Length: 195
Length: 195
Image (cartoon, rainbow over all chains, first blue to last red; front, side, top):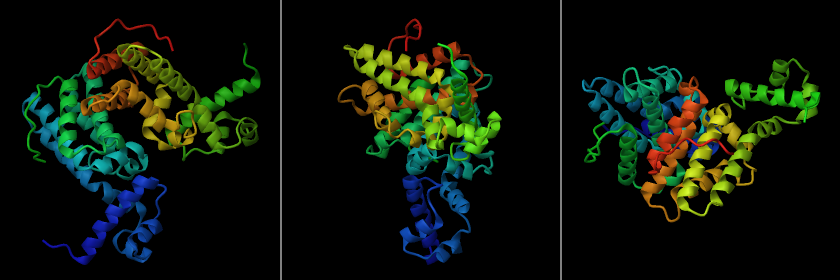
């Protein structure tokens, strides 16, 4: 499958939008700024997207799709330990694969507002689904706190400019290690990403 | 020291502003909305604050002042272990004392932008000061990741609506426990807050 010129422009447009969102925030970025950065007309942007909200949704879409699939796959595991391990490994993997997007989510609520209409009822719904699997049925306070610190800490650290210089493999090892310690899971060989 | 009527209005104004910021975001809240919620005129708001930026700074000011003092006190400790323990305990305490403000920081970059001019060069400067103390001199990657996950995880969990139902004492015990595990510090008797 080869991308045609229109598909190519769409891809570049989304990459440019993500970069501008990161620099100026979603609210501080206009369609005109995206067109200027790409060296195309605003009409050419309109050919692909009618509004900034459509662009924002499309920018977030790959991350949202991976998150949705991760929740489904983890929930389908029969054993509790397998659920937690799959969710933790998949979440670390997802954070690393979408580092720039995760950083944007951590610093700009505009991106979260833009995807309120997703399958799980927006980021709030995803957060609850992830927390529910990590903390288990009828969790006590400690289990709830551990699950929250694990998810938010991994997402914030993974998207932090302080760790932007780390390679993917090193960051994955570190985040998995800290997650396993928080959740009381045994250390394991780092698996090959499967999602 | 008894607060006069003007001081009283100022306090109520800041409490109301924080509530509206939480509900609508800083950018989605106008001076008129603050005046309406208080049942006062916009002129009465102007008597205390000329711009929304001034209100935002004043809302964040108690948290910023506590953070500044915490960094100074921790940095003044001679032993490394005492620095880490004081910073962790003080940070957990601060997060709990300013729960609503911390929740706003976690969800709205408008509040962070508003205090860019603080003593430590805004939240970025505070973050670096806190991380520097927690991770120690010449930190390896693991120490940097642990410090980042500890600070962001405690702040995000402490400000999370998921834990809003927990009492201060229970939340303090849980956050201290998770922080000590992440930083490899021994569990201790919960100290009386001193900051």
